[in-house]
Image (cartoon, rainbow, N blue to C red; front, side, top):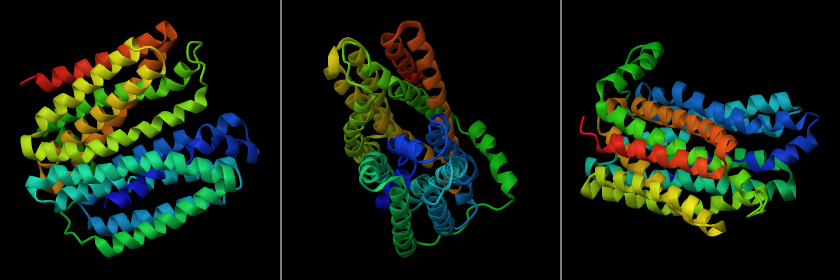
Length: 371
């Protein structure tokens, strides 16, 4: 399940290193090509809100396999796209169907024993993080040597292999709830009202992801400043440091099972707050490296622990619980990116670090609040 989650998550990130090649090959303005990652992310958000809840109403195995088939079609349509408009539509479909990874995370929580649920979630999340990391690296190399269309063809082949693996390995499940699709979506708000722990976990993670997105959205501009003068291309290399998050995800799950998730969440928040201080106070590339490591480790530790909390709330609603959690988290990321852009305009990199630190402090206040 971790391997399949990695292959699924990678599809969201394949196109980012290939934008320059796509803009050069297709007869369209570069500005339109730059919208391809945005379309993919928008599609992923749609998949989270519109497809993830179906896991509570259908056999989750059948739903995942149908999404894999749709992902293969979307990847092939991207590989064969004659123009930028069709490629944008394909990118939207790729993002929507690639939320398979989050279906699998909820599936892992379903089949794991309660005392090992955190470890199971952490293991699958380590696969998701590996896919995000490798997706960017592999697509850049493949596109440079064989062209961007080759990467989409290869991704379609990998998705077929992923589907065969899942069809062989995954057990069938019994639908947990009935009712119409509309009532399923309507129940998202009811779950958020019912569970204070869900609201708290979602708000904490939204704040943390907001600061995380603030850093990554402005990193390329920071690297271009005169004291570094490294160029935006180096920003991708900092993603390699994300391997630290891969290693800590499973550990965070085990610690949540053994000692409870509360301490793991608190430690993650503290690490992220210290990371923003390092980004501001430690000069040069060393400060960026220290900051990236602390942000990655803290972010993944808190996310795995928070997910272990929400999956224990209502076993027949894990897909919808994850929808509320991930949806709130991505909204927090969008707000963090917007605040970072404004902060950069007003006061530069120190203000961006301040945005992340303040959001981390807000998450800590929520974490410490008893009511």
